Image 1 (spheres, helix red, strand yellow):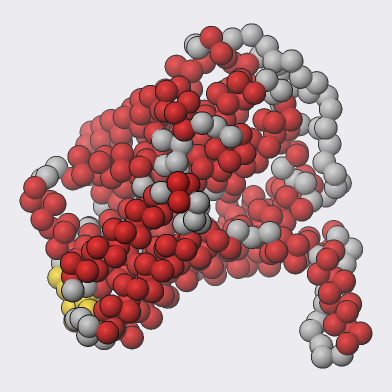
Image 2 (cartoon, rainbow, N blue to C red):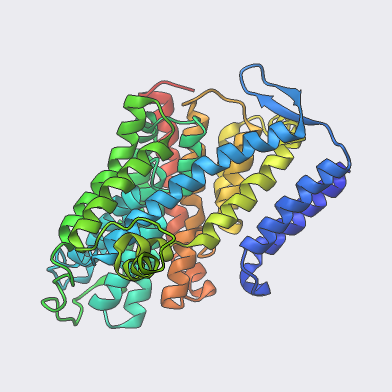
Length: 449
């Protein structure tokens, strides 16, 4: 039966990886794989276990209990992401991100490269690398008219957005997973991963800035379209970003799960959004007239409009993949696999760097989910910080290796092989530079191993 479980998982994984070839959204194989795996476990009455990280052993449990446990852990991540996505959509509703375009005052390609790189690095740490990429490429399309030049800028945005997301607990889905699972704390993640991430940004950006494509000036009218559609745009941008940044502090002070803080942040942002949009707060009622008023309110309410734009396919994909990996973890397969791999490759640094390279080929979410079940290191062990860095930045080496890359590919119609030829080596150089920095920092500056 264990062989069947592994075959189903590998087939599901393959379908997710070949999403673009099969033309089937990856959420479909993820959900199907999750349901089939748990059905096999239930029907075959297979024994399930909970990994005891402290004792480094497996403890027998009941399938209902373990499934509820994993669903709870997964729901924490999903509710957190829903809150963050809604805040970002509310900012966009007020056209808040157009404020960023106001900072662009130069025509120099080299200066623009550094400006977009820094913006990608900082923004992705606050609103996550996927959203930062969407925002910056939207601005890029308004600033740079020449498509070939724009492709190069888009490629560098992918590298820098992924680097920026790796050091922040809210910057990448994988770091958020590690943070919510209490594998890393926000402060220690920043201390260990910020400098390597900066190296991962600076090295490839410096090399690229010497290239011919980034010489000279762009031909664009920078004075146009610098104003937002709504006068509340800048206010909502700063309020929204500020409330997202508030979440790690809320967790530190209250010791409550991050999703609680995110819901509070969403409530604050939504309150101001409702006030600024001059709409009434609606109360549900069975009365037909009020029902019609509620429907009318939904059309003009920024909160309703933002919730309708949430990317639910991504949420369902995470649900499927995290519970599918949880099935392997519950059977003890990941635990035994990790032990055998540690025997084959005693150096965990090599294992983690291979994980980073692997995240360029296959999705980094299931890879990190698997690593959380494989390793039993304590909270804030450098191993978790290195996994956060590698999984976050390794995906830049192929355009399909990260959410930021996939969305940029869709927005700019970037060819897979063009990226492989022009950008991949820069991403690899940045990844290696950051990894070396991490190891030197860990062993000689922070003196932990």
